[in-house]
Length: 378
Image 1: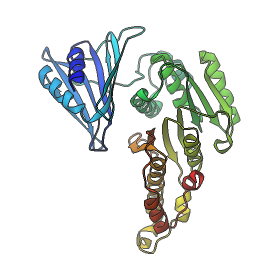
Image 2: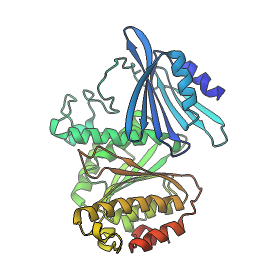
Image 3: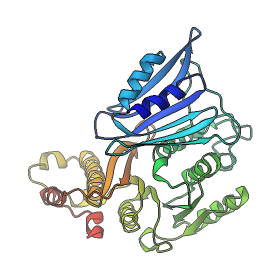
Image 4: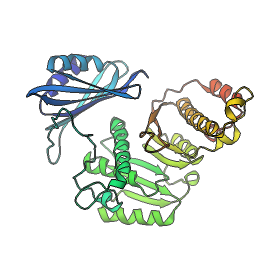
């Protein structure tokens, strides 16, 4: 890992804005590490934020120790995103250990590192900086302040953009990237995704938002035209029937109700989508099917049955995707205290299909269920 050590020696200084180690080689306890510089009593440290078992741990290290720990940590991950005052880096590590480093000069106004030891949450979209679509959608005031009643929505948008940030290495920079957003609704997250990828990260992207509500689609298209977002279009239509494209790079489905999520996932597989981000909603199907004599004492409680059914639905969705050649993870989208719909399925196309059909069938037969996604993928 000499190349990794060399790049860390180059960026571990006061000009570092931040670095994120992600995409773990194995599904182990540590899923992500973030690092940033901090000043403690005028001494430069590097704060490592380790995400482990749904908990976050912080440790501050001086240069030599930070260099050693981060070099070791990179043996656990396949990628590292780095931002400094002058440059942005993408570091990719192949399965065979080959290191690829992409470096480009930062465009636009140069950022300054936040060196405070105990800082407020470092959101991607920051309070105090005017973002037009957030103002029109009622999340932000004209002077960039977040509307208090909309702060949960503001946090949700930023959390979603963190997931987008993690999958950036999967998106091509040398051509147009096509993204489909099914069940986009008022499109808070659709606009955020376009703003982040196009305005902040300078990707050539085309996003198509699809929803059944005619008035919502009309309003979103008006806003898109107002902001000059030429490649952000909204269409009225059903997920199951949409045939407007033949191949896409990323499919996003946020709170598509019940089996609409399954149709979106099946479409994504059929389009050979490189990335799938799905936040399911209202999983009624399995709840209406599940039967098992052994589990009857548990399933007789309606609330327990409903929650078990939702969890089983999403776990099987992830398994079906792994059987189609995806590396699938089930992640916490946002804290349960803010919304019960807090699971996100993230799937990255690897092409390596998991031999899990027999296991899925045994589970399905044990519970006497027939998930729509399994039938669609057949």
